[in-house]
Image (cartoon, rainbow, N blue to C red; front, side, top):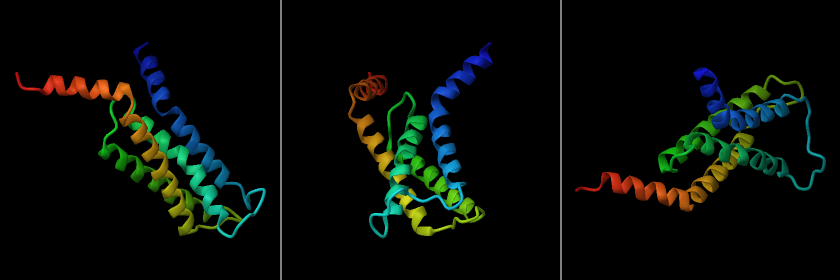
Amino acid sequence: MQNQGLIRELGRRYGWTIAWAALLFILSSIPELSPPAHVFEWDDKLHHLLAYTPLGWLLMRSLVWRGSSTRKTLWLAIALGMLYGITDEFHQHFVPGRMMDWTDAVADAGGIALGSWFFHFRRKSTPAAEKIKAEAKRKTAPL
């Protein structure tokens, strides 16, 4: 019974992050996938940025969970997201009709950073985060 609770807790914490990463992997596995409209020369980079922004948000959500967001957590989420983006670009090298492109990896990293940053600053300023910080200060304050 205790294992079921652990599995449920891990699912709540990491489930959406894993699901979004899987969706990105599935989309990058589709040969010759292209956006419905080609508006400007680098619009595919915008698509990468927009697709990876939620992953940055979700990575932060998974890493922070119920604690407070720190700069260390922010950089960890960005690093993990960038690693995922790079491996996804490498994976596309083996998909017919797709290619590995370092500029896509840069756009992926931009989306990860943007989503992580949004989460970090939103979480940092919420009343719940302020309450956690105040409680931590109270516990560490000298008597």
